[in-house]
Length: 390
Image (tube, rainbow, N blue to C red; front, top):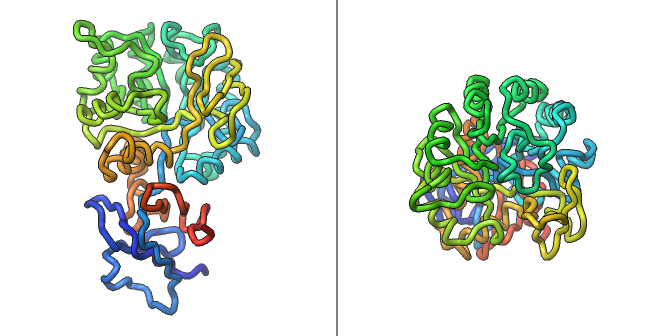
């Protein structure tokens, strides 16, 4: 059996706050203790493998609700090996739990993809499946193929979630379209998150969607009407309702820092989830890629459709989102960490296992240096990135 691991000396972000000179003890795949470094560890020193992380931060593993791929691989169209490569790419950047997102496609094709991704969820490689499209507004389609869009017919929504064999986690909908509210109710009844996104809804229509059971704002501000003083639109409705978690893409392209700070101040630190909305180029590089049936050009890390120039997902990884949140946006470390871990874990109903450094939970954690650069990643007690290797 692997020896008990004692990680000591770091600034440890716990649910109760940050502990300077803290310690986290890992036995097997689980965290068994967290404490200040001078407290008893509960493990005999001779049986423990101790790692001094003085000068570093120790935070929970990141949880990405919305991710289309990485490492040159697409979750919508890649082979199993390619999908696994994409997952591993994000693990190298601290994402220990990931929901695989698809983009708009033919309904039968998406049902087949759901079956493939559901098998990976069953194996524990991903946390589940998110369908972004085809039930979205042509007015706010972004990087989705317009000819494949359709109104959210509850029977068709049901077909997709059934195809995922209980592993569907979220469906993004333009809830103002015919069938939208009935589809939200169907999703809520089946324990699948209904997310408002790629929408042209009014404030009043968005309120109705939340009342029907929608609980997530898909990449708030993006692919929806802007906040207005006479027509506040979906942004105001989603920010003000305590039942809604808002996704934010903190890559410096999708959002101005002032918009991000506005969301945090209005929704509060408990209702924000940082996501990547990553596509194939994340962790891979500039060049030409396909996002579903659409061609994308990635230049200087920014992905845009070749035809029309719309932003086409991101090349973001969550370690970069955290560093930017703290060093550029000026957020407290604890708030940024919650947006990457506890908040999305709670939304997924997985906070009994992941999302915070607490005894009994999976040993998923990230080591950062004093400038918030990633130095180590542990998933279920095993180093994915070993901080001892530099």
